[in-house]
Every structure is written in structure tokens, then in C-alpha cells.
Image (cartoon, rainbow, N blue to C red):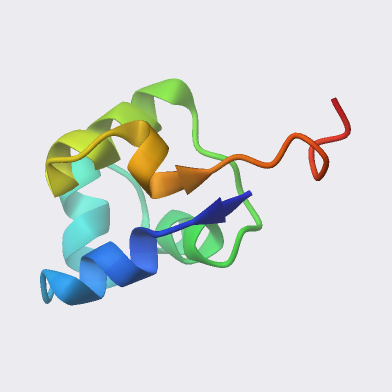
Length: 69
């Protein structure tokens, strides 16, 4: 799944460490999310949306074809 996490994080001048601490995960989780290697739980997606003051849909780009649904 593609995300806009890196784009939003850089726009707000937030480091991966700072974002990880703010949403209660490790830096490695943020790296994996930014690289599309990890799908966030609904709870984590909600925390990220709150942090960036936007909607989950604005952060995560869901493509049904990629998910084989």
C-alpha cells in the first residue's frame, strides 16, 4: 500500500524518530510504512491521521488491485 507519510512528515519537518515517538511505534515501523513494506493497523492509521491533522484516506492510498481483493 502506498502512503503519503514521508511527504507529510517532510512538509512538517518531522524526523522519523519524532514521528515514531509521537504515535508510539519504532523508527523501523515508520521506515517500513514509508517504503510500503508494512500496512498500518487501524489504530496506527488513526494516530497518524491525528498527528498530521488529516484523514486516513489522505495518508494511505488504497489500491484494491494491488491487494488482490
